[in-house]
Length: 511
Image 1 (tube, rainbow, N blue to C red):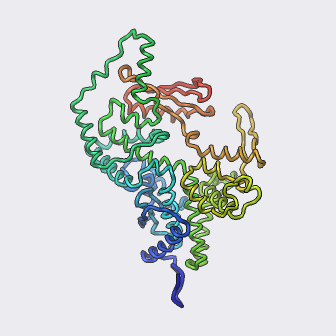
Image 2: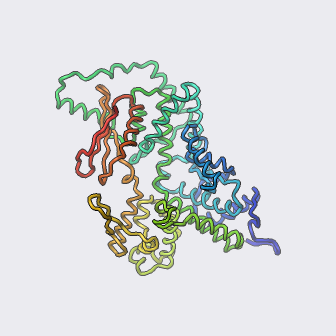
Image 3: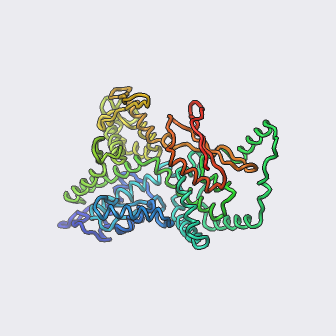
């Protein structure tokens, strides 16, 4: 690119910004992102919002057009209190996985920060959303905004027709078991159009008014043959597709006490839960990708003379704060910073591809020294989640840099044992343990609907497959069961089964 003599090559020279400067900077960032880094993105839509609007977005789980609920207002007051007292900062941006990809920029940002977060969100996150296999399989970026608009209007109409208290009671129970309202092993159906949803609701309401379900409420005749009863139970489970992992889906389809509008609200909540499910599995990769992209683009702009040294220092200060990893004994220690780990992994792949050591060549023969770090990263961003990414790409050098080791905690012993250190077998064990800590299948309780007799007592039976002897906390478990009972309408019980031995560890039920 040629510039006239005497004209500045800089994109901006002041911390103040205007829309012309934003547009010029966006174009420069886009050229590097698309032409040099080969990023593939949804069309971008940048919107400027105030700090109060950012707080509002925080409180409504980062979704535009979110329906109203008391818990969002409670969180807004909480976040605002600490922000106004200077005890908590706000994100510089918020990005929505949609098509077009919407990025919210805070109007209080300096121009340097607007450039940084544009590269981070509008290109880094955007590319990850569009290309990662989890987002491609489990979310519908083109339909989510129209669906959220429908959800907000629908819940508002329900409040007007049935009362705020009735609607909030359903939302409270649905939110309480929202984490168990996703499909983990089968792909959910695509979001339907609003016209189709309206047609389905009309059909449900018609059936509700004209169809009597009393014939299914008759109790089973006493003295039924045990073998026959066992066969009926097997047939019952088959017809209901049990066991079922998605509690909200099962309740929506099979609860005998819910009205059509209540079923639709359950569906709205589980659609939102499903939308966020890939993000829960890719926090390290998603933030690592966005951070690596903004770092690479900003350095490239500096090398081209498009941003000044002062601007670069401001950007590096913010970047350093983002990837800062406090020590375990630091009061600020929250665990492993996903920005720090993700960015370090991306940089390590770049290093191994271009300047590998003998150790790197032994551990990563497929790409060490090949020089194609960008192709390796693009492939990893598309085909991995946190667990598999760490398991495949975490190097011994990075384990040493983060000073990671593995502790063995036996509840029967008064001490912890350091079971893996920095040697060949230790590296493998540490990497496997760290990867496992990001596996939702390990960290999220596995609770499934296993049986219910709709022709009998309608007792809903849930089963918790206990892994590594980790039980549920009694108070939260009982509260969740009460919410399930509220949506089901009849007795609900939960049995804890050891996943390895099959032994019953505990049993509980709603009063």
